[in-house]
Length: 97
Image 1: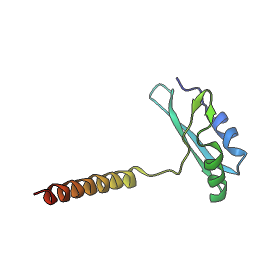
Image 2 (image 1 turned 135 degrees about the horizontal axis):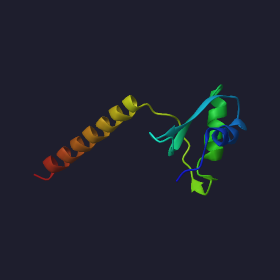
Image 3 (image 1 turned 90 degrees about the vertical axis):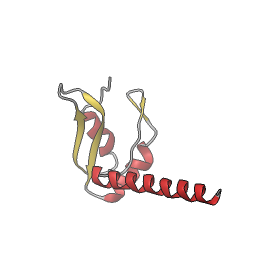
């Protein structure tokens, strides 16, 4: 169970700059899914937060902090990686013939 709430998330990241918004992702019962989003006013604040908080323990859980990647971009990157792996595999098979 994840015990982070919006206030704790905000307080953790406000030390790095002005937080425009933050959200904890929740399920249909209002329970945290274990991740959230923080939107800073300035990109340097986000950079500092990532460098400082990534890998820290929050509520006894090691956290990953990084830039948001939209689902659309993530899906495109996944397809590119799979396609690249298929090309490498195909080239490898062809070179052994």
